[in-house]
Length: 280
Image (cartoon, rainbow, N blue to C red):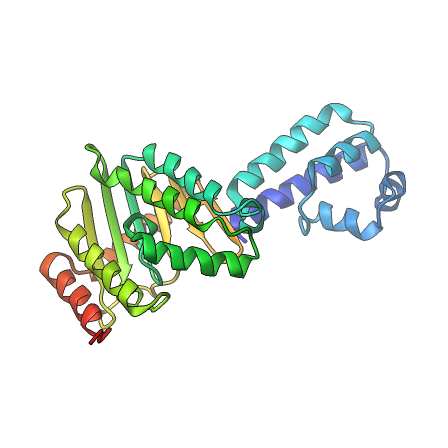
């Protein structure tokens, strides 16, 4: 969970506590009014549990501060914009998530990204994407709308060929060898990646396995227009918008970029990964 999210949830809990004390209630008193366990009141006030909108409406009413319900829910909305669980996003399948990214990429002119374990969706072939989406639907136990999701992911790639856009992407070499699909599908994916090296809108760097590093490769992330960072972890998508977070991830990207190779050297690493598949 992000530090920003934790701090925001704690601040929301502190405001709820203020409303309770202003009403002259202790924890047991407001729990009794709400018909809740005392432990729930404690978790909410101490930022250990995320309130629902209904919780906040009920809390404001119990504290005799109905006019404050809107402010409480606004604070909650701010938290939810920073952290979006995959379980909720994928409740209806992957297509909606992919279409959301189509809109986000169209609103972006400069994108910096880093991936450590997978070929970025922006560069994926349909077959490679299909295998990833099927595996993810199985893991998340979400509806399998694979073909619609693949089509939406391919639509995202249209931005690669639009003028005025720049994509600075780094890939850890290990991702070139991660067999998340059959070898023939991976071979075609590597061919696709090699073909992007000459695209004017794309600056593609590969961080070699043996390169001296200023930091460990860690997780993937994407910086949109130098204003917002999206980080995908197993359970959640984090959106970080503070100047400090954006600057931190840009420093990470810059340090990884110093270890990356481009052009012919990147072509050789991709070629080496393809040769290792031994399709004969």
